[in-house]
Image (cartoon, rainbow, N blue to C red):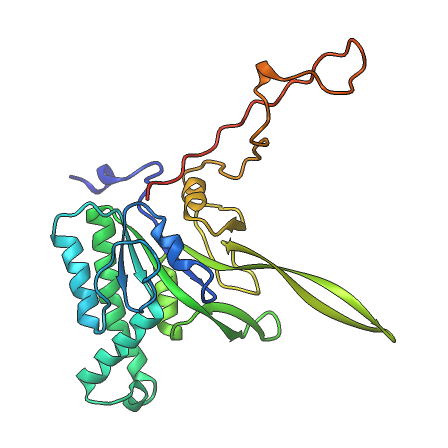
Length: 290
């Protein structure tokens, strides 16, 4: 077949490759457990209170590779792989590199070469994830904790921002591979308090609302390739519906709102006034399976 005859056209949807990172305890693992038929590869012991299917806790790098191989070669009905978490997997990778090089600490290799050697293992992991996505049709969700790093922006002064808690080279490799990088956090409002004598203080106010940031801003690393809203609730069902092009955030009428054809006459209306009709409930997106 000639090369020009192989040209592809149109939108070609594929399972998503998602990196979800954020502060501890915000609900990252719960997000993954709500995905479609998920299976967890766990490298840290934090899933005990979440109802999900998971491989035994991986304590060595080879166990993670074995789990990826099993999902690729053995029959199963899982649709989403959740790797929880990347920063604990990185420790297993560093241990693997140290054992191969005969050193106790990755820093002992010298000149930061150990981190470069570790990219070989990272590429092996991403290769396995690609095989599951491309040949087994599995969505990939990678979970990581957040860190605050100094970012030297060439256009501004250096400032702090949230980023995945990974070594710089590994983080860049994984971020490039992913379709979405989502930052999970608690929504915070601020107010200015006047303390007198021309002194003011900024106070943070948290409501406990958990959100996703989908677009990069000076305060955090993020990206998406789907023109997602800049902010979403930390709920996989809402994320999945938004990816499908639905609007799960459409305003709903109160639960006790009467149907349009059964609306009672408005109390206190003028004589002869027409009864007020209730709104017809708008359709909501069905939550994603899982």
